[in-house]
Length: 449
Figure: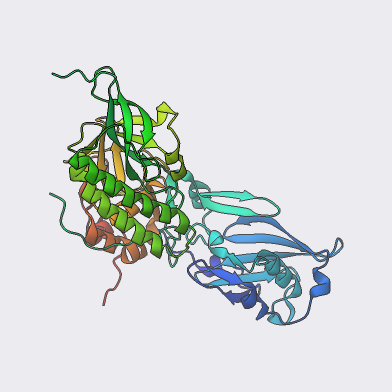
């Protein structure tokens, strides 16, 4: 069993480190909070001073502060679970925050605040091999990056929430584990217009009626002549009753997607979640109507404003059929010598559906390119959670020593909402059980009340 790293393994007990509380969840230090720790007026000293990053090793961030070209001091910073430890080469007389540390920190928070969570890597800081295995460290005089290597996705850190999943919620959901020649003819088709990207960057997918042209076999759409919008409706062909219902849903979807674009800068994500729920409900209403239509397709649309233009890029057009089958989301927990990895999987009718990585999945829907099918996700929660996993290279990484906390703060609730399989050795796959994992991986079971 890997022993938890202790603060005295990292900070020299004979060296004084000044402590500054940090605000969670980002371990943020604001300029106002910093000024509470140093009250002297130092405006003149700021002239000509600068702060250069030197390196990051063993959990210690090294910074060099220049008061002028002749006077320089080195700062050493360590980020704890809820505080910042800082010392200076001057020795910090009187065990107070020195002028050099204040100037160095002021340089970091000059834009009102600085998020120190980027330097908080418990378990990796006292083990150089672990740091080299899991983390990338890039140092520049003006900035420094410490982040997980791409292959390990999103790494769990005790006491710190996943900072990119504020749009994710976990709630228990209902149990879902169980002879005419049409060549070159102009037709009414229904096109899924979508884009991909981060949660706040891709526009919501909408169904749009369009005037389209079929191929020689009359079975698929080969080009779109015109999108039918409120400003420019298609009038050349009369819509059927089923198509009129879909046209009305399309107009309502468009208004929601347009509001999403306007609200995408809202950091709380509350309005975005409401818009996504409303659009998902419209997709549920449209799906039974779409499977009655002979001509359906998908089109990669960068921005909604392009609906007013004639589609010109045929490579973004794909014929498809919509399916009423529901993708079922599940998870797999794998154990390695020193860490666990959690992966997300999607199955349709018991068959594993392979999905591409980051940026390949649109919101709400899932493509099966092998069979030319398009599925609607089971719920908005499933979509948000699966999208978040894909955008983290499809995995969460947890050090063995952090697993118990990971279970109590995340995995336990996830297992109540979704099926999770546990794999210790290749070829073995069992239903996830916390107690079984503790026993099979030689982790000590905590004293529970």
